[in-house]
Image (cartoon, rainbow, N blue to C red; front, top):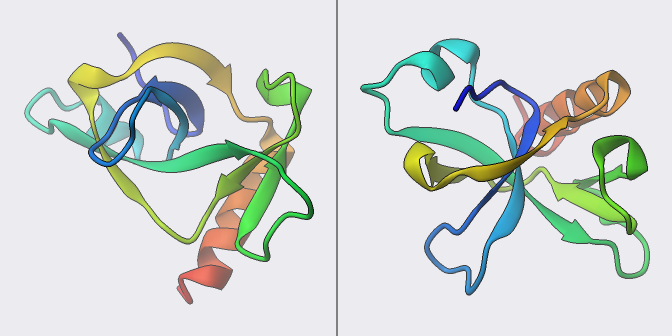
Length: 108
């Protein structure tokens, strides 16, 4: 399994009742290093109503059949061994939007 930053993967971290989609935001070095057991991810949820100011909207370009948002105000630690079912990369435009939103909401 080859992980890459800004790919969408399924995982079930603590607190989630079932598998969920996440955008991986760790750098390539962490993704590649076998001794690093965790990567950082942003949770994706079906859009209900208007997106919050801390969310970036995703769509069919990312493989989601329904309107979906990526929550950018909380970063989950995901076990590499529990990641499965890659959906492929987030589009370049959405990658830029996620980066900008992370800087904004985390005040980086």
